Length: 248
Image 1 (cartoon, rainbow, N blue to C red):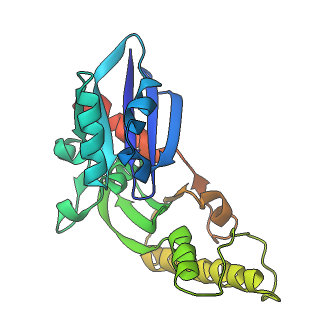
Image 2 (cartoon, one colour):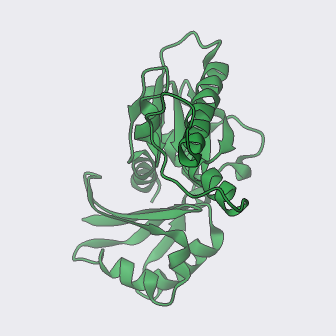
């Protein structure tokens, strides 16, 4: 038996085919904006159709219009489509926050996957850079900082002479040209931002905890963060898969 899950983000979307042991057999990542192109979603999902495929599909989504479009496409092939926050998540994790509706589905499923560590801090380098705190298997809250790639893009688009550039982790001195100066600003700036936020969050923690990194710049910042970390680029899919197995 096989099943499909997906994560619809502001910038990119990932669709995965899993088997009954929750092993990822196939994975496709594409720009979320492409969902609105005529025929695109149907073409993508046809790659996942196979014998013994369950007719229930689960998504985490922070772009409601994209989810609505995908749901419409899949319903034509008789699939039942669900979004994570429509299910009874309190069976899987306690959310110790004031307004649960404001917490993104991606951050919820990350926390559900990270819950196995009992205590952890999950840093997701996505459209925003998010920090989510799990203590004693309870979601306690988080921090949202500007996303790195989006900040680079906005700076380039908002200025006449500053170019787009690819972030490099090797920065031993200030820049002698524009791109090196930009790289120094982003590497040193986010070095300070990320390590400072980690220190603020964990200052009074008298417990063992894991720091889990995921998202586009996880491997780059693993070398810069001053604490021991692990990178898990599948943590979101693992969380969605757990919700699927337990609640659908």
